[in-house]
Length: 417
Image 1 (tube, rainbow, N blue to C red):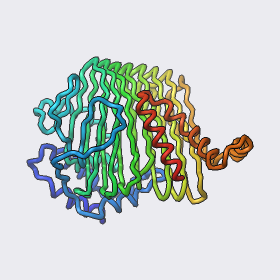
Image 2 (image 1 turned 180 degrees about the vertical axis):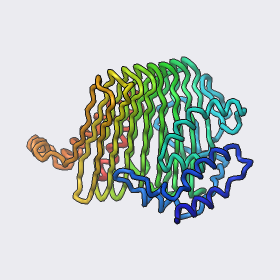
Image 3 (image 1 turned 45 degrees about the horizontal axis):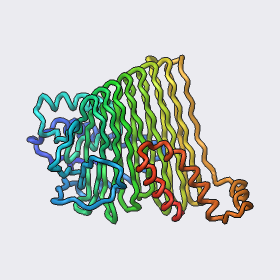
Image 4 (image 1 turned 60 degrees about the horizontal axis):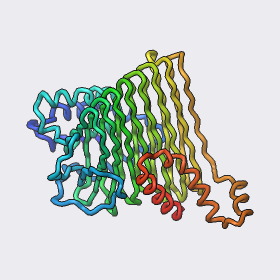
């Protein structure tokens, strides 16, 4: 009842003249069903805590700031797009081969074309936060990359204490045979907004996208970040999540492989301390033959932190001659730390190779003892083993400057564990 009352008040903030009123109304009607919340069965979730944070304050749209903030991005990119509380700060300098526009500024015909796949994917979803984003998104942007273009793009998100609810939406469309690296970094500092961010990616034929999402700040921000990727023939989607701080993070990634000979690689490394929480919800749906997917997520948990991993591989009858693999590993450094894992396979094709597994444990005492017998002090021995554990994920990062930056951030966090 508390949620539905809050939802009704939030919906009243939108006028029938709003460009996306029809889409908002559809989401509101679906969310407002009495049994909807009761039917949410999110594995090992902190759903109730997230809803409490969401409904604590009345919803209101975030206003843009007039200036950007100086943020160190690690020196690893050439094009930076900055968003303050979800609102893009336009730059005077255009970039050949890419274009960022407000969806509301497109013609009705362009909007219909751009939103077709996004709407189909979200209408098929029963995810609470995907529907909330569709209802409450304060601004929707379209990032387009031209055919055959090679780009490295940084998405810099800065959160301030201006708004309590930040609901950004980004649609990414990559042209045929384009090769793109996106580095998305979140900066929040000592603020406590609730963020519900949604990204929808549409890959053209033979397009290659390497996407990195970085959470480096140890802040009090609570965030839901959802990414849907729709792939067609010969496309490649690689995503890495690095979470080295944050009060509460729920990362939901869905890769929909709709084309043959398409590849998806989803990876993550979380290093948590104190009472930090990270939830990884990963889903790969294979709907075409001759495709490949890999998932590998690792967590290091100290203090009273909590990690959650729920991963699923789903193969339709059309997904013959598909290979799909999933692994989750966690190290617990404290008796008060917790990790929950649920690896899943659902297969309706017979000519496939699939595997899944999960491990949770502590540092190997024999390895620690061996290093100490070689003259390495216990604290350094522990750090070396943890660094080796995390390096498998970082080593796969291709931009050398980004890889070096991540190693520095990992070492800085390990000192605090």
